[in-house]
Image (cartoon, rainbow, N blue to C red; front, top):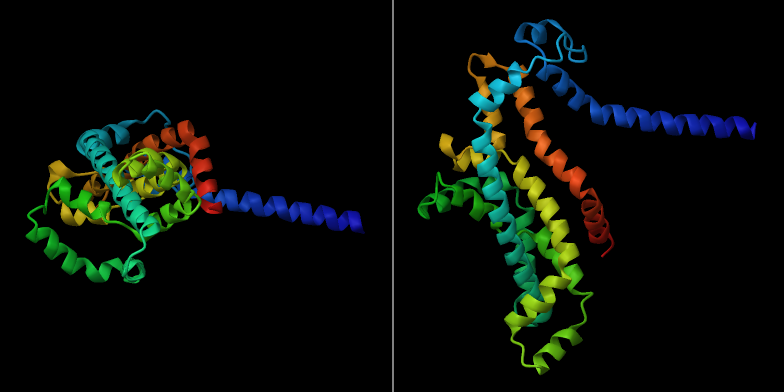
Length: 277
């Protein structure tokens, strides 16, 4: 009886894993199959039906050429790199000041950061749009960069948690040697924050790469398109070319898949260290 219970539990365990894996991989399979189908084949066959011709790369050619995805990759890479570097510098500086310097109003600043995070972003878009427009950066890459660089409370909390584990005696020793606050931040704090920085790079980078709303609203110029807005080109008022959109999605997945395969060890380490601090 005990052996039967063990076998049933083991069967249910593997069944749940198979079902969860299938649910996770199914959308990607549907998109992958659709990317090789013709327009007629896409309309007349089911989403899980295999394409008739696996060598039909016409959708990929149209997606890359007509969608101008090379320009999208370049704009995305530029915005992602500048925004991530800027966000990390701002986040580490704010965290350094809040953790190392005790002054009146520090708790109030943290509370204001938290309140700003709790307010739904969509409710502040009118005011944000007016500010971006008044700054004269609307319809430029700088609009998205400034919005992405905005110090977010999640990054600040991650940096604060790591900073609390760095002994303050290191700062005091450096000050006795004549180091300034900026030197301590640059030569002691930043190098010791590498695990936290890697975690923030992953979270921030994935968020910027996947974001559609900010580039669509603040950078409508076609020359400023990013990967997410490039996919939108094949959707119009008279219908959508889903097989081409699926091919474009596969192209957009390739860079992130390569980065994940090359850096998976660092990604897992970053998440693990970030979760236990």
